Image (cartoon, rainbow, N blue to C red; front, side, top):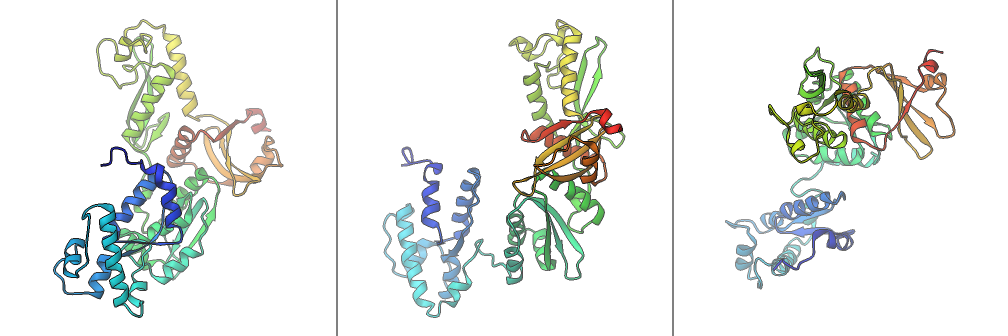
Length: 401
C-alpha cells in the first residue's frame, strides 16, 4: 500500500500549511504528535503545535469505561466506522467522537483546559510567562530561584526553544527545575563558540545545583603522538589523565574514532601507525593502495612524518598566536576569541568597520577569561567541527610590541 506513497519530505510543506494556526486533534495525541515532531526534526524544522487528545477528553467527559481505545469507544457510542485501522477511517471516526465530546462540554471549559503544547502536559502560567519574555537567540541563559540564586546555566542557539524544552520536560531533573525556577536571565553571544566558553566558565564559577554533570571534565579521550623504532611518527587515541597534554581532545571514544577515520583518508595516513588496524604486517589500506607503505617501511620516513606533523599543527594550537573570528550579536558585528602562545585569553566583539590587526586594539576589546583543559577542548572541538570559523594568525612581533 505504501510502495508508491510520497516520502515525508515531499508532503512536509503541505502539513505545515494545513496545520498553520490549528490545534491537532488525535486519539492518543502523544503518539501522533511525537511521530510528526520526529519526522520534522530529521528535516531540521521546529514543528510545534497545540494538541487535543480525545482519549484524555473521553476519560473526563464520559468516564466509567474499561477501555478507551478508538475501536471500543466507537462501538459503545454507536459511531459508525469504515476502513478501521486505515488513516481515513480512523480520522473520520475521531472526528465523530470529537463532535460528541464537544457537544457534552457545553461550556467548553474542559476542552479549553485540555489543550496542550505537548500532549498530557500543561505548563504552569508562571513558566509560560517566563518563556514569552525570552528571545530566540544564541547565548547563555541562567535559571534563578525566587531568592535570585542560580540553579542552572545552559547555552543554546535558540534560548527560547531550549528553555521551553526544560519547562515541558518530564524527566525527574526537569520536573525539579520547573518547581524551583522563578526567573530566567540571559546573555546574547551570537557565536555558539563563545556561548560554550562562557557556559563552561560560569558553571565553574557559580556551581549551580542542576549542573553537576557539566562540572566534570568535558572530554574523555585525547590524540597523542610518539615516534617508533623506525622513526615514523605514530598517532594514537587513548583516555586522558590529569597530567596528560594531548594534541586535541574528544568528548567520547566514538568522536575520536570518527576523527581518526577522516584524517587517515584526508592525509593518506597508515591505519597501522594510527592504531586503528592491529597487524604485524601491512595495513588493509595498503592492500587497496590507499596507504603508501609506512606500515612495512616502504614509504620514506620524512615524507610520512611531514603529513603527520601537518595534522598535529592543524589541530593543536600549542604556542599559537591567533584570533578565532565568528558571527556577532548583530549583522554589523563579529566576535573574536584570542589565543596567545597557545593559551585562551578571552573573547570580545568588534564592529565590521574596525580592523583588529592591531594588537593593542584587540587586547582592549577582549574580556579576560580563564584558560583550562575544558576551554582548550571547546576551542579545538569547535575548530575541528565548524568550518565557518575564520582563523587569523597573529605575528609574534606584534604581540611583543
